[in-house]
Length: 443
Image 1: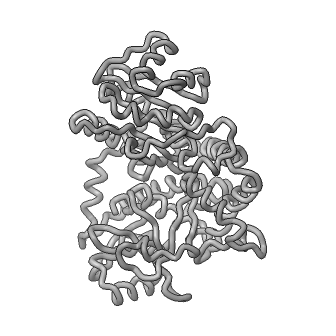
Image 2 (image 1 turned 45 degrees about the vertical axis):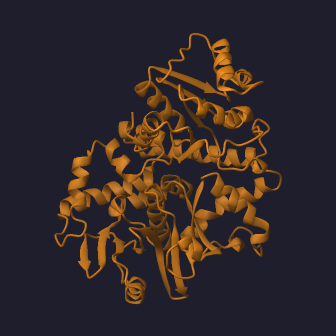
Image 3 (image 1 turned 120 degrees about the vertical axis):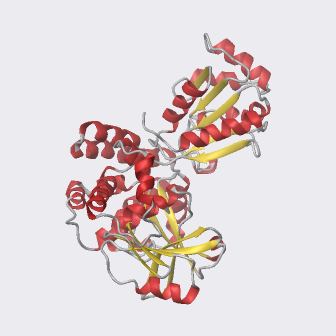
């Protein structure tokens, strides 16, 4: 089993539910193929005496459990009538409602199940970020009412770089020894730096999708990586065809396919004209929202000024889009691009776009919202994050070129720390800390 950080969050939810009498079910969201169902099944098997798995997509007849009165007592009664040999052990049972978008009554019933502290309930499903009005799938059922206040929502992503290293056999002790170089004037030994730099390039190519990582950890075959990733990209494209409504099917697909081209050009904001010549947000803004809600992309907004809260200073019309998993992005570029990344021979604007994508992905997985700062046509900071009560700038360089934009930001806004992520080893100059790209896992 792959070690996942979200497992600890599941344990924390269980602890709060039992010790603090938390009357909330857990709703696990995230893109397809990131391991939602797998992690819940592992959690149920390890942490509970009884685990009940109800998959509404595979077993449509089980929807009748949620027909009629939706009290917890009646639901549990119908569970025992429809699922042979289950055990409802008070205080030690997890009920997993998988593909819950296929049973609207089950989503409504989360309120009543949350109030019954005898049993714990986790729900998950595909494309739960979409509002029901956006979904054209005939099997998706709209709940009569949403259980507002009775859900703890968690978003799950593909593996981050630290989890990727765990799959390689690296332990936390080894990684925390590396972290000691943050804020230090001591340089990372070159042999150690070269090894982690190589691993980070592999992460850019393999990505964090669990199926891909598990297969690569076992077979070390980049051709197999490419094949599995192509299947996942095709699945995402099928989701667009199945779930987007009407003409949005075509528009969402056009926007999704345009993102790799835009990143390769290192555009300063998403340009609708690269999706279709002469078009504006009027035609495609709904498609962009669909992609964001489905967790297929990560959005990064320009801000008018770099002050807290950054979301209050967003320029809604100026944003960039990044693919949710950089391994999938490099798959979309093709095998030759993967090879160039691994051999460190990739050049041109595409190189910068790929490095921006991997840093954006890592920041999202660290829990940050994405913003950038472009005060004029000549200067840009790739990312701003909110950390420890301050706005922290992050400059990303595929190589190690000059830091004009970052230096200007430090001069104008005096941040407590500023990060420059580069291909080379670490260093410190005033509040500016220069770190290798792979140190993003510690930010």
